Structures are given as C-alpha cells and as structure tokens.
Amino acid sequence: MSVLVQAPPEVNPLQDPLRFERRVPPCAIVIFGASGDLSKRKLLPSLYRLFYERRISPDFAVIGSSRTPMSDDQFRERMKESVSKFLEEAPFDEDVWKSFAQCLFYVPGDLNVPSSYDDIRSKLAEVEKSHRTADNVLFYLSTQPSHYAEAILELGAHQLNTGKGWRRVIIEKPFGHDLQSARKLNDEIHKVFDESAIYRIDHYLGKETVQNILAFRFGNGIFEPLWNRRYVDHIQITAAESIGVEGRGGYYQEAGALRDMIQNHLSQVMATVMMEPPTVFDATNVRDERAKLLRAVRVMKHEDVPKYAVAGQYGPALVGGQQVPGFRQEPSVDPDSQTETYAAVTFFIDNWRWAGTPVYIRTGKRMPKRVTDIAIQFKAPPLGLFQQETKTGLREVRPNLLVLRIQPEEGISLRFLSKSPGSGMRLRPVSMDFNYGSSFGERSPTAYETLLLDAMIGDPTLYTRQDMVEASWQIVQPILDVWANSKFYFPNYPAGSWGPKAADDMLAQQGHVWRIP
Ligand code: BG6
Image (cartoon, rainbow, N blue to C red; front, side):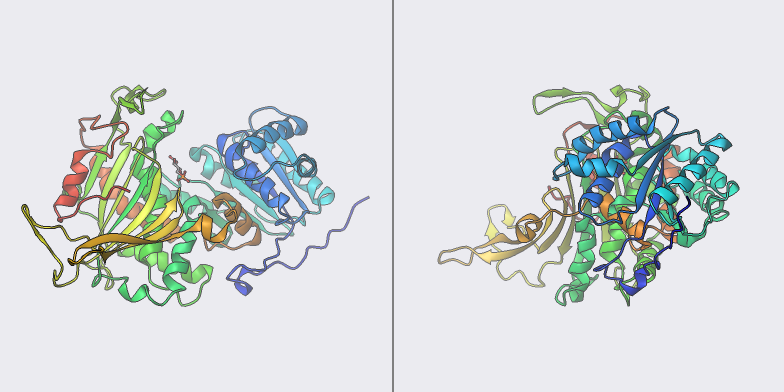
C-alpha cells in the first residue's frame, strides 16, 4: 500500500532569522563517504545528538554510502561504536540509539559508477514511504575532494537534484586547491544546483564562540565605537594545535597549513571580527558583510610575500618527555617535504574602518598547546602619565587587550591597568573575565550539530557563499604561488615550540610581538 505523504509547509528561515523557534522539516540525508573519518567522528554523533534532544523531525533517515560493502545492520553496528566513542560531553542512551538506528541505511556504491546513483534513488523512494521524509533530500559530500564535481554532475545526470521536495548539498572543505580550481568547481556545481541549494561548510562558523563574536560586537553598545583603526593597534588571530598530522600525512602534504586553516577557517574568523554590522541579521546580509570584508583584504604583490608571510615546518623534538617525530618522518610524508605545518601572515584591510591596522594570523601543528583565540590590542593612551623609569629605561606600557577565546577555555577577557595597593602609583595589568562554561553552565551544541540543523532547515547564514570562498582564495593565492616556487630550509621549528623565528621578525618589522596565549 502506498502512503501519501503530505509535505509540511517549508520553514522559511527568513521568518525566524534569529533562529529561536525553528521547525525542522522531515528529510533524508545521503552521506557520500559514510565509512570515512568525518562521518564517524562528527556527522553521526551530531545527528544522534540532535535526535536524542528531539531537535530534528522524527521523520528522517540517513543513507550512508561508500565503497565498503556493508549491510544496513553492519553500518548501524559500526556507527554505534563510533557514536558511543565520539559523542562529546553527552550520554549515550541504548534506547534512543535503537530508535535512531532504525533511521540508518546503507547503500554500497562507487561515485564513478552510474548505477550507484540508481541504488540511492531507490533507497530514497523507500525511505520516503517508510520514514515519511517528504522527498526532502540533503546530500552530504564527505568524499575525496577530487570527486566533488563528478559526484555532483552525476546527481544531476540522475535527476537527483530535483523532486517533489527540496534538494540541498553540503560540500566539505577543501573547496578547491587554489583560486582557479575553486572557480572551476563553483562553475561545475552551478550546472546542477542553484547557489541557494549549495551549503559549503566551514565548521569554524558553526562554533558557538565564533557566533558569539557577532553577539558581542553588535549586541552591545560599548565595544563597536572602539572597533576601528583609531583605537585598535593591531589584531592577532592564533590557531595553535599541539597534535601533529595524526595519520593524515597524505592529505596534509598536499594541503599545508595555509590551505588547511587560513584560506578557510581563519579568513572566516577574520571576516567575522572585522566585518561591518549587517543591517539585518539574516543569511544575505551577514554573508554580504563577510564577503565585503574579504574583498577589502589587500592582495599581496608577489614581491611582498617574503615580508608578510612565513612558512614553517616542525622537526623532531622531545615534548613533555616524549620523543616526537618531525613532519618529514610522519607516515605518507615525503622525507624532503616542502609543505608548511605552520603559517603566519600579515593582512591589511583596505577599507575606511581598518586602513593601516595590521592583522596577524598564525596557525601551526605541534605547537606548545591547543588554543584558538583572537587578541585585539588597543592603542596605548596618548600620555604615559604613570610610566615609571627603571634602571633599564621606561617600563613597558601594557596596552588594553581584549581576547576572544574560541577554544578550549571559551570566553572573553579584557586586560587593563589597575593601581597596585600601596602608597605609590604603581600600575599592574589585571583582567575582567567572562567564561562560557561557568556563566551558562550548559553544554553548547557542537559546530556540526548547529550546521547540520541549519542545512535541514534551509538557513545558510553560517555557510560560505561562492563569493566568500573565491575572495578567501584570492587573498592567499599570491602566497601559494610564491611558496610553490621557493626552496625552504625545513624543519625550522622544533615540535612543541611557538614556530619559526622568522614569524617573530615579521611582526618586529611593524614593532609588534606575538603574545603567548
Ligand atoms: C580541520 C583541519 O579543518 O580543522 C585540521 O583540516 C584541523 O587540520 C581542524 O586540525 C581544526 O579544527 P578544530 O575544530 O579542532 O579547531
């Protein structure tokens, strides 16, 4: 007996741009690359968590697909193992899992083989009936990036891009390998999907603390008047990781730190910190402002790259009593690899608000600790009324510093000077701190939970748009060009350190120093 499924009216995210009361429509999610790491570590745990909290419609199904032959039950068993292992700060509940597992299906297939798409189509028709998915379909491309274009063209060739319900596609990073390939990929995808159906994921935009930057800036009246070149001396964005390449040597060797972190995550963070206020908080306006900021970043001349960009690669070292291999000794890495595991860049934003204020971005593997933060360093007061003379000259002034901590100790601190107790006017830096954990005392959703939910609802605010992606490739492209033709004397920093000396010299040119986060 066939069941007539009445699709509920689609939720219009524009009617709830602040995302309070959003109803999630029924849908099927097709994950290509379902046996991969991302699926195990992030996608399935996030979907389970959303299901557990009843934040998604019970009328939903997940169809995993990859080349590994598996039955539905084997897929469910595998995913159960991963979900219970990778659930972040959340309990695993056997009963909830049983209901969730009933929504999981598996279709073995090869993206290069056209019949695989027919199998997906049949499964979609099945779950539309059994799970009342209303023919709404979200495709998730979590495969080798070299297969993105081909998979999307095949979806088009098999008319999987249209139907009674909606069709959307989430595309994982990296989106292209350089500006030219990103443009080409956009062109290919647009042959099949309209821009409004394309969700390019950048998980940093889904992080609570990154979203909070907008709340902090535009929900309060006192910071924005200071948020410009008149008061801000410079900005430092740091994303340090203590881990190495963790078995991803093959991928990382092709990518490098600039592509892996700066072109996408950290450019988007920079855009969030420095964009103009949107007139309305909705997908179009927020993304317009991010795109405008990225377009205002000065594109370096090739001859300026050595002055404004530094590459590093870690060498072996003893870290915390343990011998750590250098990058060149990692599995699947070329013993003479010229790939950077550390990158530091100086950007200038050529717009009215930020002209002349440098933004320093650095990221690296095998740094002393895992920390991502943004430090806004304000200018010193015009007169050093309280400056003291010491034997070695004037004591260093510690200007105000506002630190937005993205992870791991999520929060915000403001450093200012205060009088030390005693008869003299001796000043000492102190800080006012906001800590997410203790202020709210509740778990924040993970970035993937937020982003998956948004895609199901049809809210692309936290996804990147074609113009944003192309603009962020544009600003790193000269660096990629010059580095591709450079010979580096790697390794140039030992594992467990804050990176190469050249990165300190880069800041010293402007009279600045990296802070130790
Ligand atoms: C990924 C990069 O996109 O982001 C990884 O490919 C990196 O190399 C990771 O480790 C960092 O993400 P997070 O959320 O742990 O800061």
